[in-house]
Image (cartoon, rainbow, N blue to C red):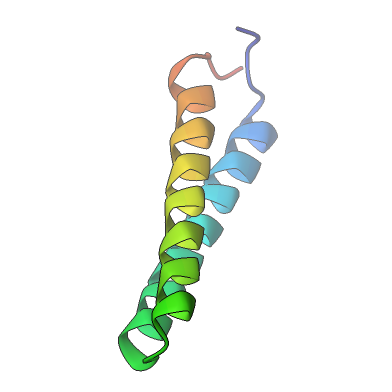
Length: 66
């Protein structure tokens, strides 16, 4: 895999943080809503954000930083 520049690494790390922050917010929503369909939708969103974090993390671990 291609090498990442320091700027690219920082952008990926920022995106990981945003995904993690979104996951925390969505989890808070799950804790406050009663509608099972809405809870399910939120769970799906959390799974998608977690997959995004894994994908972004793999870009960091599979490449070198310039």
